[in-house]
Image (cartoon, rainbow, N blue to C red; front, side, top):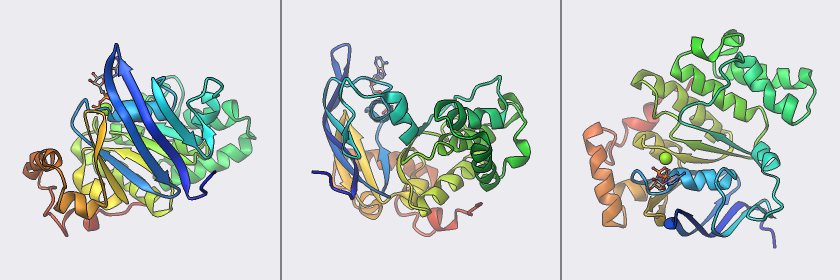
Length: 266
Ligand SMILES: Nc1ncnc2c1ncn2[C@@H]1O[C@H](COP(=O)(O)OP(=O)(O)O)[C@@H](O)[C@H]1O
Ligand SMILES: [Mg+2]
């Protein structure tokens, strides 16, 4: 039976590389409008999880159900699914020989077959929202990392996805550009877009998340509201992980500084 509140259901997901298990019967349900932040040590399987949700990695077992449709089936048309589950990567992955607008219109016009005028209107809307309409004719090489990442987000949004996946989208950015990208995501969260976000930006995680998932060795070891996770993590593993971030000044206990002072651009 389809539960209308549930947009995504992952059950006993298994993924291994060369016989080495990376996701270990991972089970997770995401509700419509929910913002899930995935945290965990490097190599624990965060990117692999997102890549499985988008069909970029075949799975070895278990089930992914999206809006009642079983994605872990040989019949799945991943190009269709990717129009509904958008993904943004650490390294932008813009087409270097296309300008900003061309990068954005490619999906809606070429892949989805929408009218160009309609797609253009939407592109203008989103580019204005992220402050980049005046850069629409620039090529990726002419943009800063933060600008490229905002374009990559708009490119994904231009397809009207029902879920957005973000994989460490600020990890390659200089510190002064991190904020401009996080602001965009914070605003999408406020508008109720369902998102799964992998990040190491702890203050941002706390501000944006409805729920924090902590993964260790391919298993979810904590699944809690952000306050609980940051102030009173249930496992030693998460506690140790969070201690690393204490030196960044964005650790648990930095209440009142991080989240609420993030200026909102949009
Ligand atoms: N294409 C691949 N081939 C072989 N091993 C991989 C591949 N992708 C990821 N892995 C391995 O799977 C594990 C999880 O990787 P990943 O999901 O990228 O971790 P995270 O994103 O949490 O840092 C790591 O040990 C990594 O080396
Ligand atoms: Mg990763």
